[in-house]
Image 1 (cartoon, rainbow over the protein chains, first blue to last red):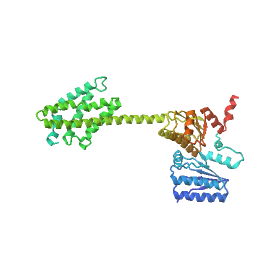
Image 2: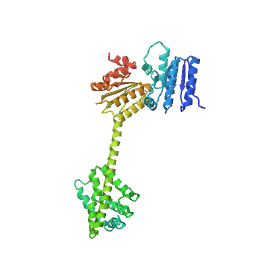
Image 3: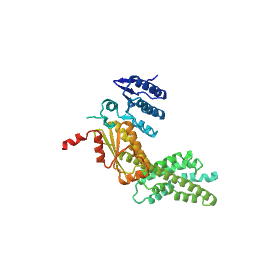
Image 4: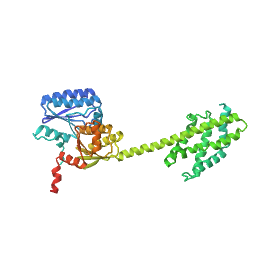
Length: 132
Length: 288
């Protein structure tokens, strides 16, 4: 059975969804991720959905919920690499994911997480992507 | 209608083929004398083929049912002629005349043939009229359809042309929109913008609507959706170039632009975008 790996990197957790999400897998991910966050006391969670091409209303809600749960457990959550089609679908479904940070790719997502969890510097969201 | 009168038309078409063709051609040529766009020999070939096919089709019986299987080839041929004429820029009547000009020669022949039998003359004339009218309408329909296809294709091309996404700076995209925004266009805009965000990895997109004359609720809704979708992907949007009238409309319509950053001009939006990227100082330094 498919399983979505949750990697720990210093005080961050990395989740890369690389298989087609189906309902059970999404539920399982939610369980495991919340368990891992409380276990490790992670400060940040990065969820990479760049290979997710199709979402339905359930998966959309699961993504939104997972991100919201991680935030409740005091881990900053960044959703990275959403595909245009997925973004359009979520908006059409009315799932605008308020309060969830987003970034274009893993690199920018990591920068965003580091600035949000690490230093006391209070950087606005969009300053995450220094490319200089 | 009896089988006897039904057989008159195919018989006439067969017996007087050459005469009909000549008379018909004369009719057609006199109809399009002005700036004829089609050569006489082409016209002759087309007409001959059509008469042949029509003869075969009428022979199969049920002569006024042009949707029937026996008329398949006639329909195809007429369709080709109408489409070709539509693309060559013929007017609808110039296209329909192809069929309608056959009336006079055909009716003359029918009258000669049935001169002594007024009853069947009326019947046959009626069915010939019905047949030619239907065929004529069919050409017009196909003509119309081919023109509509051209229009649709051009609209699509226009859609693609009118939504360029330009890169202003490292990580800053701009989308200058010109012309009326309808739902279809905003949809294309949304898709091409999001696609470009993925391709370029830009953090900030500026949607400039200086060239947009009016905004309605649906358009505003689409703009908001675009902004939200871009945000979901991790890019921030700034809307610039909102004209006073549009600002009034947006407020009157009760559209909530809430969390969207709006700026008066593209320049302001660009400045804001650079600030957001923390690159403003770097930009201004060389000037000082």
